[in-house]
Length: 233
Image (cartoon, rainbow, N blue to C red; front, side, top):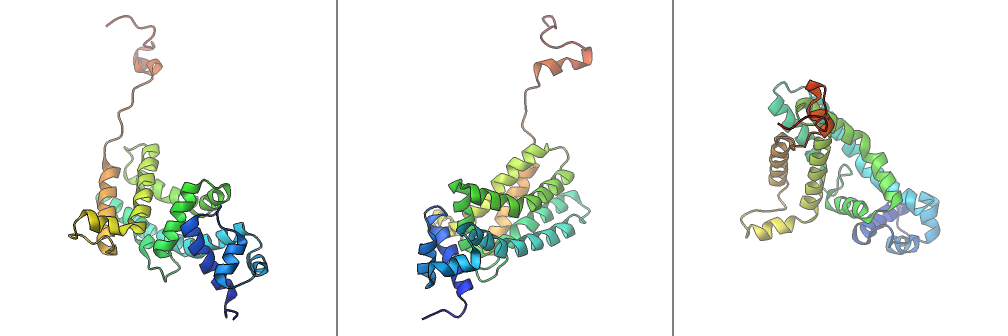
């Protein structure tokens, strides 16, 4: 029996298969079979498997990025720097916890797909991820750097990268929190997860920058001599 909306059935089947098996291991035939379609329907609607993956990302991430941008714009207007930093982080985290029935964010299944795509190292997925997220990521990194100008931007990039990993792991494996907390915490509680992520991220962003050794040629710049030419102390 033919499904009433074959395009949506193909998208749902592909998202589920990609989120479990990755991109490389799933064929157009696999997707068609799971959707109750024929392979020609997949190519008719999406041209290629690459086009199908791009459509999955766009249908979730365009609304999610729009919501993040709206919240970020409001966060940047917060006057107190500490409160502003928290609002910026919250603007990034909250849209990712949209329910699985909501296109914005896509819930745990799409987050699992994103985590697998990032780990798989597929060039197609890498380009799609960059195309989908880089502009929004730069906007958040810049906003954090404006709020914490004493922290080098490169360090903010690292710490934002850690936030993304924590976000993936929290959404994909909430049961681990419940298990390790011996039932005293519910890893599937989105409100608690958001607060814990926001609080821990704000703390990590505010940590002092790494102490880096000063290059030898710069240590004695004030005297006009490099350390190599300077005599013993």
